[in-house]
Image (spheres, rainbow, N blue to C red):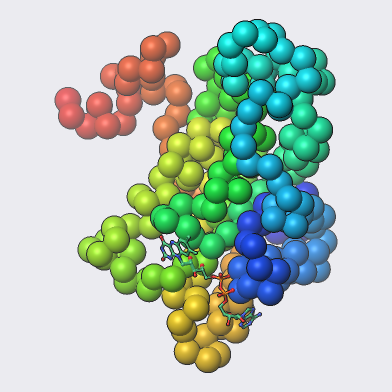
Length: 247
Ligand SMILES: Cc1cc2nc3c(=O)[nH]c(=O)nc-3n(C[C@H](O)[C@H](O)[C@H](O)COP(=O)(O)OP(=O)(O)OC[C@H]3O[C@@H](n4cnc5c(N)ncnc54)[C@H](O)[C@@H]3O)c2cc1C
């Protein structure tokens, strides 16, 4: 497994090219390329990525009088009329095996520019739609990894930590977005307390990250629902493991 060559898309969002988060992004590119993987980069600030979903995203409108964004996404992608910046990102996304999201934690989430990448690129019709989500989502067969930096210390995000657990904090991304879209979501790589750590610790974090990237095959993906456990209206079936447990 470790020897198969992947296409990797790194979506990176940091306003400072010399930042530690950017160093992590560079390390990821080098490490993956040395392993023989092909790496594509979307450096959102450098690209001046437009994060704002709007009517301007569609060349031709299905309904010019009232904007239903997801409906226009579906129709525009099918007709090849979606905005060129979205089309270019969609091509990268659809061709890759692994997406790495590289960012500093901003208010318990990703920076707005990256949220706007999700809003505009994860288009209805291709990525999800109908009853295609979770294990039937359009991104099934692909993996996703969050690699982020933060100011807080690791114990602040532990089970009894003051901020609560990291994966619960980022549930809207891990499950609500990536899991929903059908990705296999790998356990996140988190660089804690980055601006404040002792000398030498940042180098140690980079070493741990490089090591992490060479062992992705060994990581157990996060667990999400399978639609097999739900009826057509998404009510849990008796076969659902949690329902079965109650009986
Ligand atoms: C709007 C906003 C909201 C925030 N919300 C949260 C939050 O909710 N929770 C939270 O915990 N934190 C939060 N933070 C803090 C933020 O997450 C951290 O400041 C950020 O992740 C630090 O990463 P950086 O890449 O910006 O570090 P930088 O400040 O860019 O880097 C830190 C140091 O590392 C050095 N460095 C760079 N490259 C290397 C290298 N290769 N080797 C060694 N050293 C290097 C730099 O020179 C610098 O001295 C928030 C910050 C902002 C601005």
